[in-house]
Image 1 (cartoon, helix red, strand yellow):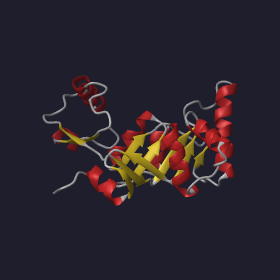
Image 2 (cartoon, rainbow, N blue to C red; image 1 turned 45 degrees about the vertical axis):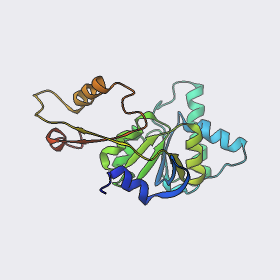
Image 3 (cartoon, rainbow, N blue to C red; image 1 turned 180 degrees about the vertical axis):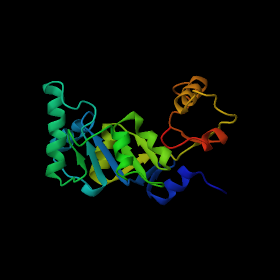
Length: 208
């Protein structure tokens, strides 16, 4: 039986199957920024697990508040900065060398087809445009990813959305996805993978 791209990626990264509906997979890259990662860093340190599974597979950037707007955001940046230095994370992009995480990481070549990626950010799934399996995760899963280089998921159920026709002048990819969300709802694909197909998608550029 043919498999979806998500199923192929899962199978090639399989580590363990602790229960029928849970699959533990190997993570190729853990992406970090200064908003969600400091909480994971401090919790790991408090539990005496202040280490990383592979510094070359962890990428970090200060991107949400750059430069810091107050003492709280300055501290968040400092925690991430000090942690990256302590653990030899070379791919750390500080203020002045940074950008939006979901743009800078693909531009640096950290996202590739077939990769598995996690990050404590709900927009992480945008890296699926590059043929990767990318998911936003909570603090606990982020900690496990940092510590062990693995993450647990349900086996992927894929929704195929075929977009036909032709876009009118002035209509862009953002309009298309907003239309889809309007039809399926904000929870219409929770815990699902979506594969977009059809002539409209074929004509889109990566920049769009």
